[in-house]
Length: 264
Image (tube, rainbow, N blue to C red):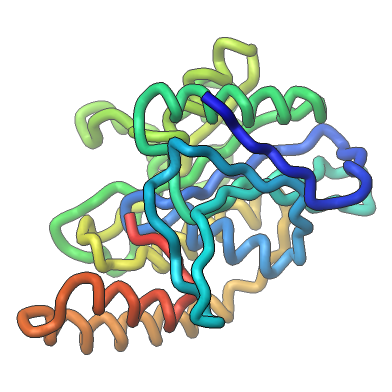
């Protein structure tokens, strides 16, 4: 399978034992919302674009009313002090089949090892039948050490056995494949409504709060609070008209409103 990994900067930066945070589309788009917000707030810089024929056979219509192919990108953020730098994996989609998902994960881990990466954090959602007022955050990982590290002083529940099934896609594979390379990895999973039109912004907010504390990101979530109010108001309007409005039309309304190009 051919993977096109295109460098978007003239010079690849030197990073200090970076931590990778993955947030690709999934249940409630929790991970995507969180990572996209962090990228914007930290003004992270893009340095790799990734494309493959294994991506969904579709294009997106952007704000300029032009089409663009689905894409996944890798961003970085350097810090001036002795903290770990960040790698941030974001995008429109995930690979569509099992083999492609494994190959993609291996490619990301290859890049991560070239930068002497320290640890990996994947983000996602746990679908519920009703929208939680204050989403609970669960965690799991490939070592007891990293779970203990992130649970220390944080209200995280690692009792996931029997609560969720398999963690599907890149968010799960990064944990398993990282273990084969002796890289510690953890997944933060927020409760969210398991509905294809629901945006898990509340879950993303709770995850960002944890990342702020553990990684000292200093991301201001006040903007996200405003988006939660706007999203809930917009969602109420949309769901009331779902009997007359097609799902695709509803998706377009949300995408135009919140710049989310894929609903998991």
